[in-house]
Image (cartoon, rainbow, N blue to C red):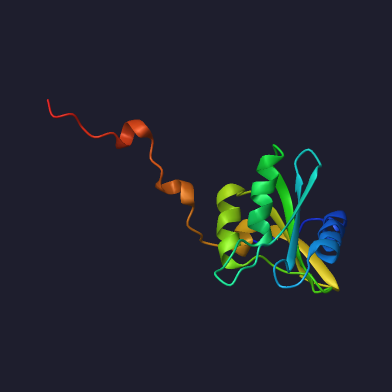
Length: 145
């Protein structure tokens, strides 16, 4: 593992904490996420909990960012409601984040010590979803001449 720690984006943590504190209510929304785009914009979202499962805040954030025309996220953080602080992404979110944004930085750590690391360091030796997609010409069936 080649963990390299980058500068922590405290403004991003504050944005996620604000959403967690003001928008997370009850059991339906318990996590908030904030991400910074390459152009500096911050996008926020909350999870959608349901007993059948539901998307985490990080996944909702990807869709929210797309609706705002943001496709180049640089850094992301998730924060729990009830002052739980920064929470690292789950395994499913790690896989989706590495597939969509392989250069993404993720803020992790405890309330006393945050650090920013690469998503690939959170999911080493990962399967890359796009690897299964072959060039159309290469995968076209051979004609029977």
